[in-house]
Length: 100
Image 1 (cartoon, rainbow, N blue to C red):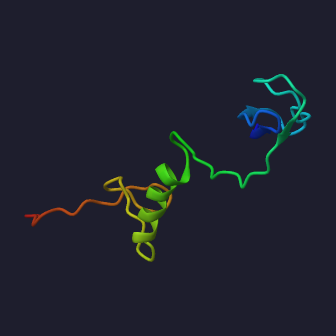
Image 2: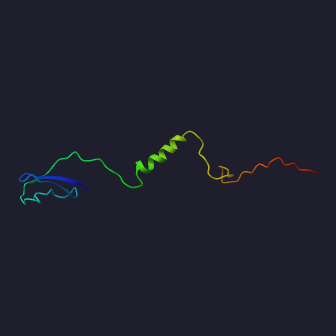
Image 3: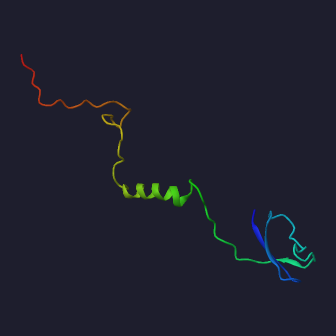
């Protein structure tokens, strides 16, 4: 729901009211009580997103990390696993000889 700006033509009182877009505009001034209030046309304000889950706090970090590794092979965090069907790769044996 938006916040609308109002001004009274009689006493000059300026105030804001938080109301739904489908609500009728206010007409009675809360200060002088006369029906000389009209809604101002404003340029609006920018949106401010607070908390986690928004572009600046979350998406931008993940997006920049994926761009920095773009074009390179994705890194695997599991050691010894093959990229195909989850099979394990044989580990190399260091310098062993089979003696008869």
